[in-house]
Length: 385
Ligand SMILES: NC(=O)c1ccc[n+]([C@@H]2O[C@H](COP(=O)([O-])OP(=O)(O)OC[C@H]3O[C@@H](n4cnc5c(N)ncnc54)[C@H](O)[C@@H]3O)[C@@H](O)[C@H]2O)c1
Ligand SMILES: [Fe+2]
Image (cartoon, rainbow, N blue to C red; front, side):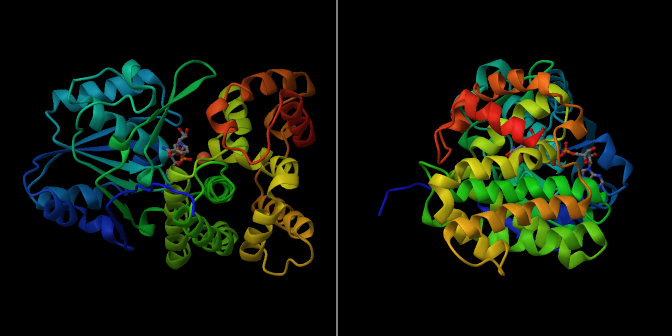
């Protein structure tokens, strides 16, 4: 059996309603903390759902400060402002409550507020030194799995992003409470949910670090997500459906944090970066075409996933793979999200630039089950047009 290592967040609470007793939960885990920074974005703040957690934190003796200026795909200046804000308030515990953008900023605050390192010092793998502030993550989208990953992603230019990958980015605690996701709009539910499904699929076929633990998590994740994604889009107020989506996204996050994602994400990044398409939607647009490209190397694994996501699939590995791909395409169509690059404003004349940028994602492409050249990338984009 191949040797492997697996890491994750030590403490995960999956409990509808848990956010309303956030103070109680956090007080028990961090008896000495005083000054909490709640990190979120304007969109989630407007839902009013930060109120109950904030009040419960105060009830349990915390001084609570809110930083609600995170924006989607957070740029560097937002991270740096948030870090200064935390330092000004002498924060000793950081809580991210929001989607991947808010949770990623919360991670970076917890690292950088100690003042030992600057943002520019920590891009890349294992560049973080020393300890961070205590960190609790509360996801409000069922997508990125950032609450259990060791990654934070920052927008560094008009069209570029960089990642920080380090074990210190694993939070102390993740709290999954679907009452926070009941109002997530259907199109956001769909795109973020497909992102989570892609995490499970790509972890399961990850070339070097795939292992028994990540495989089990990916399979469980795909089962929960494939059963519940369309119901969550059609009737978002069903708590058990939303809780299943949150858990599925969390399990998929644990899987890909250890068995990393590959060409779907590599080809999605330029679509998001250049054309400002949300992360989940960019993944969904290229997904079927990357899976078809990968099929010659990965059909037996895709067939195993088809048995979970499309139980009626039968026949050869290739036939089951095709059933998995058309099942994912059908899911996207049913939810009403865009399904072609043209629908998000991309033209034939953009494909060379997209292919050039995708080839820069060498870390992700190295995890892909099939070697992918620039010509392959361009052909995949052309098929997705
Ligand atoms: N750290 C990781 O492991 C990881 C992995 C993948 C992507 N990412 C990053 O995460 C970010 C994307 O995260 P995301 O897809 O969760 O979206 P997001 O955090 O950018 O949020 C998207 C939108 O949804 C709104 N929203 C969030 N929760 C809501 C709720 N419950 N009700 C109503 N509206 C709500 C927000 O206000 C925002 O407008 C990107 O920056 C991406 O690069 C991180
Ligand atoms: Fe993703």
